[in-house]
Length: 133
Image 1 (cartoon, one colour):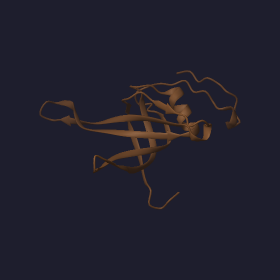
Image 2 (tube, rainbow, N blue to C red):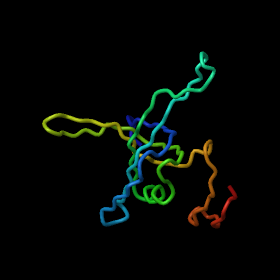
Image 3 (cartoon, one colour):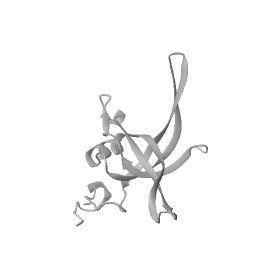
Image 4 (spheres, helix red, strand yellow):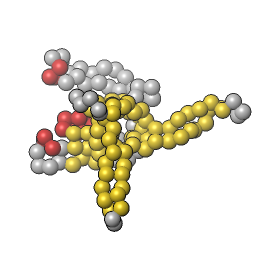
């Protein structure tokens, strides 16, 4: 781990299709999608919860995580994503452009908003089993 990496955890919903790219071998497969988050605030004047500011984050993940994400999640799913943040910079029409991105190191469903069926990986040393949702 580098000392100056910016680590973050993001909770929200996948708001684009999960796109998978494969550069001819399993080591270079990656997935790209976006996650939307929304603040929810209690408005004392209306005595109701209201929507606050939003964040749309482009997320990339690589290798085994990319395959698992693509096989598991679809647009609209509630997720928790942990990874490092960085600014992706490029030039277009003579102007420098930038975009904040997250490189995911781990990802799972947000159990606040869903239930899941868990299949254990054989490599974990435990048999594959189904846990009732």
